Image (cartoon, helix red, strand yellow):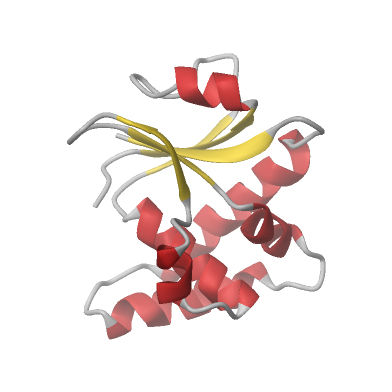
Length: 141
């Protein structure tokens, strides 16, 4: 489980540079804590795209952009997940309810309000910051 999770939108070079300490202060971030970010990205993508969790893992999704052994990691959100999160046909509140239920089935408590806030803030960040040549990344440390 990650202690600090920061989502951000930038170029791949800047994402690589963010490995040691996270994105620099010039980049807008959505910061959260205390959930397994890599697992969450897999769960969200599986739920939103209909692809199996195991198939995504087998394809090395999410992509590990950079990592320090037993330390920080930078993950790239797939284009499919990014598109699914920002699709106007998707209900982020439905995804949050599903995620809370999924975690409960795993024996983990996730507050519905917190799940909704995480997903809404991530979608807002993507919608406001993403532009040509930039992708969405997740730093955990």
